[in-house]
Image 1: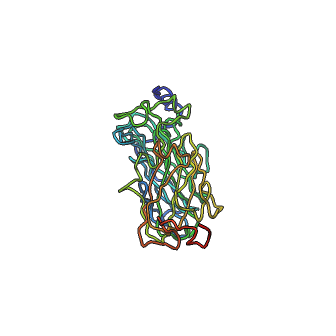
Image 2: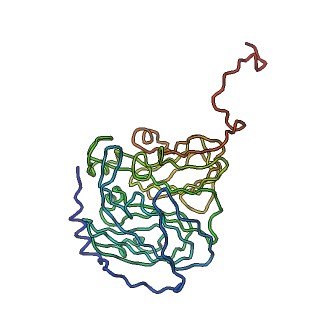
Image 3: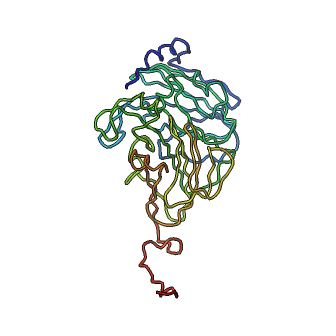
Length: 348
């Protein structure tokens, strides 16, 4: 079943302020220390932030509704923050004032907004950022709490906007930044609901009935089957420490995030400040995130999966981390010829 959001969105248009085409920059205690942030598309992450003093961060996002690939031969009309799923990665420091500009491309059909879980304030910014096609909205918030947070569209029907790809991550680093690692990557899981069955070619429409029943056609990393496979796999060298910023846009399923053949040395569950060590699989709820770190010690290809395994191998929640470097036989031998019990000193 296809859902038409137009009537509900029209009601929202009448009840909420529409953004204007030009926005005057709000004053702040950090005037004179402002920076327009460089944002990145997954799996890339902006450079680490090591400063300790707060400043004014200017974030510019543009909503685009566009057709992109969901799987081989399968197209889908995604609603995006910045033309990619997930949306841009935002990186700020605790105590920063964030001035957020949200543009809605003139070619779009629907109003949109943004709800950032890092915001302390009603709706996470959704009402303040509500914006019609061809318009721009602006609001300002202070990043009070460190952590890794999801952001998503806050325009009704919210579930449909999120199901079409409108989510991303914002990292609020503690002053001085997180401990240094060798590589950082951005991974986000999402579930998609199409009228056609899994793998049916052509342009697929959103199926509201499947979404309400929580029966996704696809469960993927970074917006598409194969987005982290083969020549698009994550890479590292033996001996490096890799940090993954992992989010779950949902809108429905909890992720059981696991890297086959690796153990997470450190996990910040739900993107918070408490640390867990030596973790095999971590749960990430819809609208939640986790920071995981692992030192890669053996070369080879490691699979990133949702360990609800039919999602991985039948619906698309599968990626790769390719590790290059010398063998480490003292840690992992690889295939060996079986030794007899006689050779081991036992009875044949």
